[in-house]
Image (cartoon, rainbow, N blue to C red):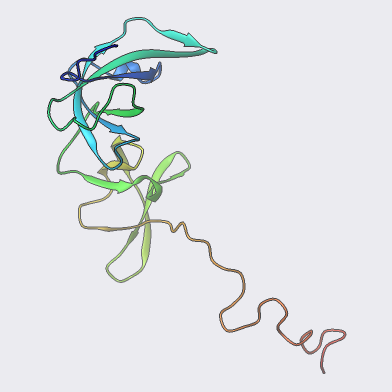
Length: 179
C-alpha cells in the first residue's frame, strides 16, 4: 500500500525551450484538470529546471507548479492537467480578439466601424498578447467599435428557391433557352 500526502499538490509541467526563458519562480499560474471541467486552480511556479530534457529531438524543460491550498479535494495524484503561467499582465488597457487583427504589408491593422456606419482600416500598435486577445497600445481608443471577421459560412443558393433542380431551364437569349 502507498500513501500519498495530498495536502500539498504539485503539477509537473513540460515547457518548450522557446517559452522557458519567460518563466520564473514565484509567477502566478492557473491549472485546469480534464476531470474537473470548468474549474481553474490557482498556484505558483516553484521550480524551473536548469537543464533540458530532449525527446525525439524536442527540447523541453520541467517546471513545477504548486497549487494553492484549499478547494483541491477533487484533485487526485496522476490526473492530467494543463497549466497557464502569467508572464505579464496589465489592467485597464484596450484589447481586441486576435482574429480582429490582420497583417497588411508588415503592419497590424483592425477594421473600425465609424459613427456614420462606414468602416475604416487602421494601423495599430500592439502590446501583450495571449492565445485569444491582444493589447492595443496605439491607433485605437477605448469605446471604438472593431469589426471582428465572421467565422460562419454562407450557404450556397439564394433564399426562396433557385437552388438545385430549380429555375426551369436556361434563360432567354441563350441557345436552348426561351426567346
